[in-house]
Length: 596
Image 1 (tube, rainbow, N blue to C red):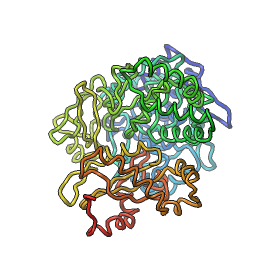
Image 2 (image 1 turned 90 degrees about the horizontal axis):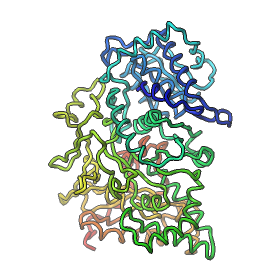
Image 3 (image 1 turned 30 degrees about the horizontal axis):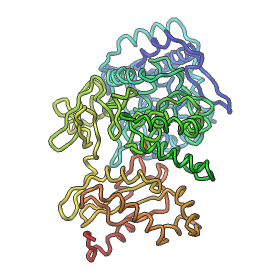
Image 4 (image 1 turned 180 degrees about the horizontal axis):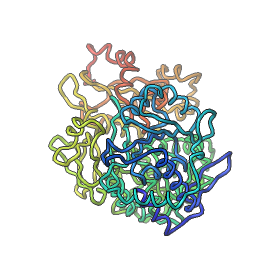
């Protein structure tokens, strides 16, 4: 992946990488980034980091635990160009998993961003015999700062780096990314230079369809996730400036400051953005409120194709009066948002796209580097309810049981130190994704569920929960939802209400709101949610219809353990945590008639 440095040299930028330092944006020029990468490469070589015998096991492993920032990418590129292997971890990885990963990967040196992460690592350090030293990106007491490793590059160093770089082959493993997983212990996905580069090059064709006045992107998703990591390479190969958000809490202000033309996101963030839009809209009164609600209705009706002249006129009016304000709130320049990790509610895709903020939802896995399919800016290559056409060079076929199988240069070489598991998922060069889907008549891929998440009722009928959840979450009163019913007579659901939208509803209906715990016990609120569910139920067959619900007081989060770092539900954890609530749903199952 270090070839991207040569690509940048052809189009050098004064602000290649950017981040806030003490509240002020600091920019690294292309030349500065290249010099820092080379200096760190030389330092690692002088510390004894090698490519060993050239095998994945023989190559030294360098760990990195940090949120996105320029130093993250500098470490990444430095490690790659000397033939070592980067092992990046999520900052919120548990102490136990950090220890497991460092031991299994035999990490030799580790870079951490801050005091909190340094303290976490210190607890595990004594049990990791391979770990020789830890370096900090921030200034931390009793820890060597990464900048202390950097020395002016000598000609001897430069020649040494060039000589080693020239020996690296496209099929060499460049990174081992441990998947968070919704169950079980993380697996180390081995990706080669070819895996990631093929995906970045094919995705560049998608990027280049977008009409950008300037090449400027905001980055805030975890850099160790292959989605953001690969997109970063796309930016580098295509001459973009990358600005790193200060934190997830400052995305709003950072968008206004940076005024990016594109960024990546997960559906959860889009839901939060739209929630804020609705909150502000609900504060309006009189004609302004009516116009706002009318504009939402117009956006709800948006179709990519087949827009009547009358609809286009209404859309233009709504854009001038309302949507333009939405775009200004996120910097005013955003032309497209690339979304991955989990399914995006179709309603959100319609609304944002109607506002000329085009949502490009894609699909892939860490094991596929990651993109398998993606909706594109070209209207003929974009379709709501799908994850788009296949990426160039990627093949897909649907197995007899509906599972999506993938083959191509993007498919991993296997799981680190786990050949048995590798053999389970890669058969005759086809990677078994574990997802259920279909290719429509236009060869657009549609994900219908996760194979392992499909359950069977006590009546022997199979239920795919994902389509039910995705559809019902389109209602703005539902924040999160998990369909349950394995080995039960009927399907039910755990629901986390959107308390942001529920509170004003309670006020309008003269319902006193004192706490989440109190309000979800109010019969009028329960009836509201049951009526919402009942309204959706006719869209599903009888077995799939949600018969009972249980409202929950607290949002599921990564920090509280119900979500993976990429925002997916940990169904097993949620089931265990709310076992009492689930039991109460089915306590009277014996006298419940699901036909009612």
